[in-house]
Amino acid sequence: MRIYILSDNKIVSPRPRGLKAEWGLSIYLDLDEPILLDCSQSDSAFNNMKVLKLKEPKKIVLSHGHYDHTGGLKNFLGKGVQIYAHSNAFFPRTFKGEEVGIPYSKEEIENFSKINVISEPFKIQKNVWILGEIPRTHEEALLEDSFMMGKPDRILDDTSIVVKTEKGLVLVLGCCHSGFRNTVKYAEEVLNDEVRFIVGGTHLIAFKDLREILEWIEKKEFELVAPCHCTGMLNEFLLKQRLGENCLIVGSGSKIEI
Image (cartoon, rainbow, N blue to C red; front, side, top):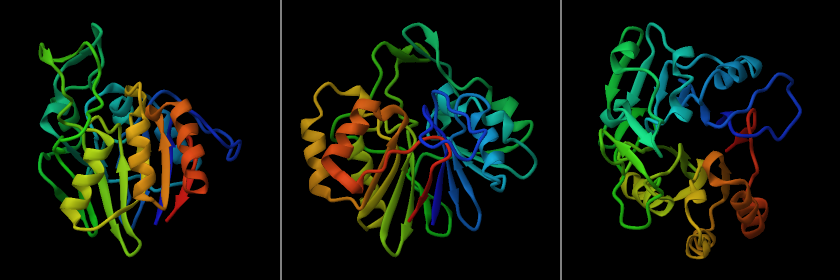
């Protein structure tokens, strides 16, 4: 299978020309029926999809309701497009007093496309699942001074996509607010298989001391980890240092073959 990083905080290759980067994330799963996880902050994901000459997706999964993953959604809406998200994704939320939620109401989105509310593991198509709410037994990657509807925001809408392949599970992360270890373990529990490949935002930027998490990642011996967005640049290089060729530095426009 092929996975494209449609939008990320950075670009790591000068080709093709015309790629855009911004603080946000969008990942394109190039399957028989393509699936888009998140839409970045504004128009970068849509622009890069055109630059890469990819087919417009009819299935869009929102990993959670933050603006940097949902702001570009309006570019992809249309007849026949299915949106999959947790109900909490559409609620107003703030971070340090600033509005950081999805910049559209649920009603606005439903004027153009169908919304499917997901909270439990859900098979979106053959060999592809949305994890729904992820149980948290290890550390969570939350934001300080973050609120939803006036209450502390645990970002319970955070979810990921997992693809079952002959090589093992491919875990595609949005922001991983549920916690990296929690998300990997839940994917393995739901699909009864091992996660071998990880692509996306790990939110390791939330932690001051990564020693325990990095040691756990090393012991898992993943075949590929391609971290981006909320991982943090320093942490991406720490992963590269630890994992060597099993860690891939990616950015807007990067293609990953699995």
